[in-house]
Structure formats: structure tokens, C-alpha cells
Length: 326
Image (cartoon, rainbow, N blue to C red):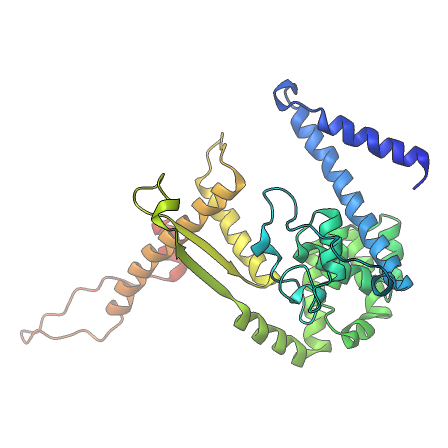
């Protein structure tokens, strides 16, 4: 980075540090968030390209990365527990924490520490950087800004083996890059999933089995001394699912959150997700009650011995019961 760029970056950091939320005029916060979103996206794109260059140069094998990682990512975004797992079987972040078996930080752990990311996010960027070295068409479109980082991640995230990368390179890569130029990341992700089912059906099945085995959800009661503000008790929820499962979960929570949000919803995102999770659970319980009633109504009519039949409660589909109860 030359002196002019370093000075501009320093000035940007200083300007951001001086922002006082209360002093922002109406609408300025929204404009600033939009602009910063572009800055962050550009920075992530640069990080991917630099990580790819480091990979080609073999930097990870030569550099002394010991002690370079921090214990956590961005403030409030990731604690030690968030660093336990990464993406992709056999990836650098699969080991516990940000370090490898010898105590030295892995490349993903090192990037996480330097860029203040979770190890999961850093590992995803590193996987993308490695894949782009074998996908020149997509890499060039990414360098030119014709496709976004989300598009790149949609293509590269499933490339968890060299054979998949080799199979995708060539005509398939060109087609997916062309799709990425005109469509959203979700459409690209769906196209990659469809291609993968044909190209590596056994691998897809293994991935599904592994994802199912890795799913976990724990509800841990908070010790009484730590929950004094909650007389009724408190429970911490923790777990892990695959990225695809997480998208399904978040889509459902967003729908539930929109259904219950008012015009001036001031809840924090974490609060909205928690409220939405309870909404989904309550709706399912209500729907299950309707389904139980419907199942009983589908039984052959019983006879009381006098020729009278038990009145039918009527049939109820899961879709219908959910819409009525929610």
C-alpha cells in the first residue's frame, strides 16, 4: 500500500471514530450504513484476493504466525465458543479454537485474528481464495467487480474436495460466472447445488449425513447466582447447524419476525430472532393440536351401540392449521 492510500485509510478510520450517533441528522445514519456496507464488501473482496496471493506464495508455511490471533472476533460478535468450528470437512478451522494441533494458529485462525472475524467467517474466505486460484473465469469477474463476494462464496463453499474443484473448472465455471453476473447469490447457490447433485451424488449424500450428525442444540440453565435479574430462571441456548440449515432457520425466523413486527419496531436483531423463534414454536404447538384433532377425525367412526356416530372434527392440513393458529 502506497503512502497516499495509507493516509486515506487512516483518515477514514479517524473520521469513523469521531462519529457521534446523537449528532447525525435524520437519514444520515441510513446513508452512512449504506456507504459503510460498500466499504466492508470491498475490504472483504480485497482480503480474499490477498489470501489467495499468500496461498500461492506459500506464506502460511513460512511465516511465524504464533501469537498473532486474538481470542475473539469483533466486539459482541464472537466469543471463544464461536471459534470452535469452521466450515467444510477437514478445513483449517475444523480443529478446536483458532490454533492447530501444535498450538500454532492455522491460516484461518490467523486471518480471523488480524481481520477481527470469527474463525468460521475467515475459513469461508480462505476456502474461497483457494478455490479462485483454480477458477480463473470467476476470479477475473470477481477482480473486476462484476460479481460480489456473496456470489463467490455461493460457488466456492461446496467445493470441499479437489475433485469437486476440478469438475467445476471449465465450461461449468463459465456458465456459473455468467449466471452470477445477472442473478442473485441465492440463484447461483441453487444452480451449484443442482450441478453438485449430478457431479458428485455420493459426496452430496455424505455431506448430508455429516451435517445431520453435526447438528446440535443445547438448553443450559443459568446458575441462580448469574440470573438474579430473572427470578423465574434463565436458560442459555447454544448449538450448531450447517450453513444450508442455518439459511433455512433464518428464513423462517425472518418470516415470523415480519409477521409480528410493528411499524416502529425498535428491537435489536438478536431480540427479534429470539421472539421469532418463540413465535415459530408456539405456532407449531398450536398446529400440532389441530393435527391431533384431525388425525382422530380420520379414524373409522366408532359405534356407541345405539347406531350414533362420533361427530367429526373435520380434516386439517398442516398448512391450514398453521395459518389459523398463527
